[in-house]
Length: 337
Ligand code: BMA
Image 1 (cartoon, rainbow, N blue to C red):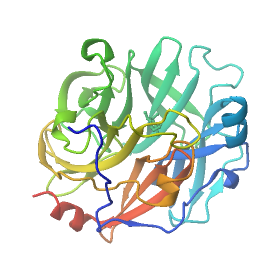
Image 2 (image 1 turned 180 degrees about the horizontal axis):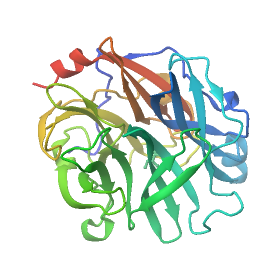
Image 3 (image 1 turned 180 degrees about the vertical axis):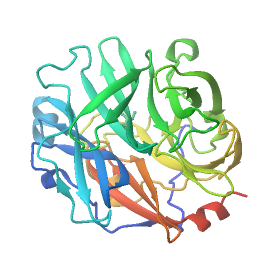
């Protein structure tokens, strides 16, 4: 893998909407960055659950070293999943709230599914003792969120399949085995659970070495979409290029985040049936490459299949705003021979 990777581009079957669909100034409470949002259809509307970092701005961050006061998880509603988003008045989770577990410093990167009528979330959690991946349940009125289980460190970037498979809950995840491998080389794994609490029978799904344009880490993104041929599954793929200079607000941001595509076996989703060997979505527009907090980042957390064969892919751009891309499911399947 060369140290400096060439420019990468989004596949033409992906149509990105012209502008971000949500930016920090849209929110009714303080927001510096709004990004990495899970989306689901629920009670006749689209529900977006997003990450909100608040408490600084670019000037204070760059010039005064003033970092974020916190990260919260907020909820927005839309009739068409594209525009007209309205917001619940308060975030549903905020680690700074009185009464919260002091061990949990922040929640982020929510992904949402509905299984047997229950709204289930995967969340990343930072604690002083390591990064943990959590499973939580959102109440039907979307007002409260109950933690069901959390992994040992270091594991996060989890995503649940949208239904039980063989009677079990199944999740993709990206553990971070730094100690044994000496550097960031993180792969995508799968685990299963009878009850969302006890997770096991873990298996490797795909390693970084299988993704030609990544040299750093790969992991889950949005909940997979079921098709007749298999689970249509996006991954995030990261390349690190130490020759990259200041890239966004941060002085030392040298990574690029893209999304890839694979098909997993319907009954045994540990099995990769097909993998598309080029990026599906890459940061290739100014909002993704030249503006924002961490440039060269696109990070999908939501994928909604429509009855007309379209899929909506919601992704964070530059860790700063929420963008939307669409594709025809048949076009995506055609990439997976
Ligand atoms: C990942 C997560 C994401 C973020 C990405 C790029 O490790 O923290 O929330 O979008 O890094 O900064």
